[in-house]
Image 1 (tube, rainbow, N blue to C red):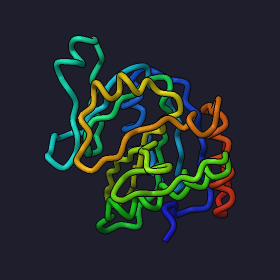
Image 2: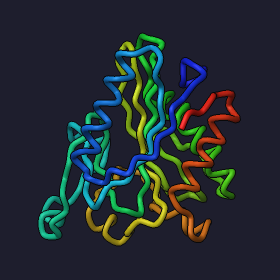
Image 3: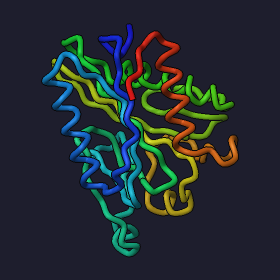
Image 4: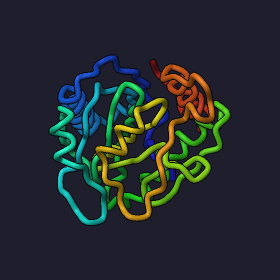
Length: 217
């Protein structure tokens, strides 16, 4: 079953880097898709340095070292999806899929799997052999390069994730407490030197087209 209910998808590479404003834009676009049967979208965006936390801390997901974040002056913002805490900086590319819902319960793992296949295909086109790792990761050679979170209602679905291109992994590892069983993180620049956001966005667009979608930019 396809994640998108229609055949036309708007592809946006947003230039906003303010963390709070980007959270607001995520929520606004979700409500727009929820209220309109004619809109589905993929949004790429980058935050300035910050930590983004889920709504509720649980034992299942990782968290962050609050004293380290405070000492380093790292901003912490909250998203409307679940999960733990992720580190954002200019070397991390965020990607969000906004789709109409078929209604009824949406299995998070199924949503993650459906969304990830587009990114796995896009990375493959760039020469990276990535794979979806349940419940909510994309891995390359045993290393985590993307973590996903989601929410859904009777009318809309949001799946969004990180993508480590050339992030400050030393700082990420100082700040973040990974969940049990999480592999080490790695930047995609380890496999593709000089990888940059526009190339990923363009490749993702090609992956959408290959699945039969009409991509609007």
